[in-house]
Length: 349
Image 1 (cartoon, helix red, strand yellow):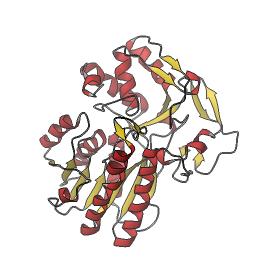
Image 2 (cartoon, helix red, strand yellow; image 1 turned 180 degrees about the vertical axis):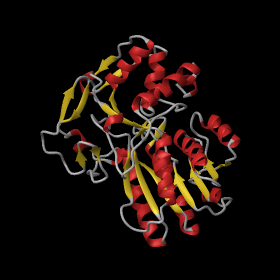
Image 3 (tube, one colour; image 1 turned 90 degrees about the horizontal axis):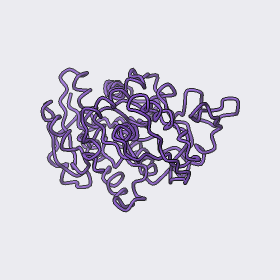
């Protein structure tokens, strides 16, 4: 079997490639990446050692696809992953559109030509921010949790948020590009008879992730706490009670393998792929975990709201259960942080 992974030198793409090579016998992987992001070069070297064929190319350029031969399946892991992309001066709204949506057309045309299965790594940030903000929540210790004594909107259960949850705008510029990609991918698949799977991923986390305050939050927080960098609880009264789930790419790879091997032609195509409630943690509880490991540090409260922040995210679906527990993932990130004292600098901070 031959697999093409776009954005292969990013954290998600490289980790998924390594995991699938371990899981699928006889798998050949070709990857394409523009090597734009910090860490890409490090991951490129690791992938080459694993026998992955790498192509330096830009998804926005149709000519860069001309050298790609036929693959059985494409995993699209190429995108600027920051929910604040398009709102920041260093990455404009036009650049976000070109990188996260316009360039996706060439991926779709490739799948159309070769009838390759497409697996799109989408995002939980396609969900409606106003509806997320209106979820009935209660304070449990240092974290917001769902208040199940109140009626829950469609797509929400005690297990978390499912793919039936509202996607009405606003969802963020980043989320809107992902949502548009989902729609056009499904239409292409139906029109040109190739299989499409869409996975709305929660927060991917693990050792080797380049964390910044607006993406890779678990890696960033642990590395910053270890090195006594300033930390802030932004929004939500500056309490740090906002909750995020975490999913290790190795667990995501198990789900992707199921989809790669599936011969199913009908049925559900969109799935949530998150860590679920048992792998959810608030920033305040994450900081307490870091306090216990590295010594006490008190983040500065900053109650001013930040665009697109939501108080609660937790997803789990597909009849698939991640194997790696929250404590194990945090410990893996912390051990990596201790072994790589220059990690924040290499992240570009």
